Length: 200
Image (cartoon, rainbow, N blue to C red; front, side):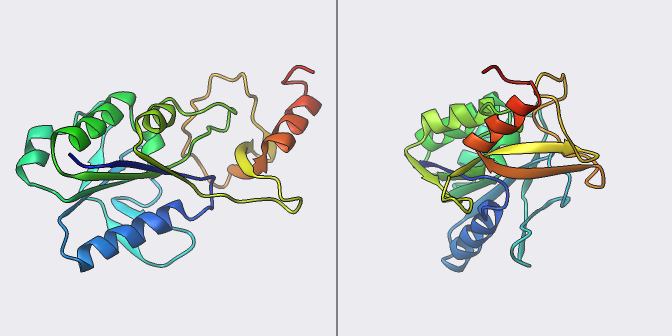
């Protein structure tokens, strides 16, 4: 049996940088490591990259949204670690499969990603992973008033996106038109209250 560790933080909190560092450290120690990232994350092709460091790591598996993990093959290959970046983009079924792997074989699963979508609610896959976790690490970032940053506001052409829109929670779009700001829960509700999108 392995462990199931979940590391979460807001955008820009060094999640991917930590995933890269972990993979590099594991390989230096000659530990057999499987690196996974979701195919939905189209920003860096088949690599885990960070805006904070120049290093990058090639993913062994780019997991399609409806794709099942080949559990038998992973068990057969006897991995020591499975490192997953941007796990919040995975399906709940894929999270279930990763958790099962940590239970039925000796591979340790270490996952990095976001907790909250830009709509102000947890990603379903993140909520599930956190419920399963043997260990949780929250990368804490604060604003100038020392309020914890835990929400994101999505802007399209400089305008905050409507919370009630039908747009998907996972958006990797045109970065010339789309941007994100990380804010505290206080500022998140202040901004959307001002826009008339949350109740008093």
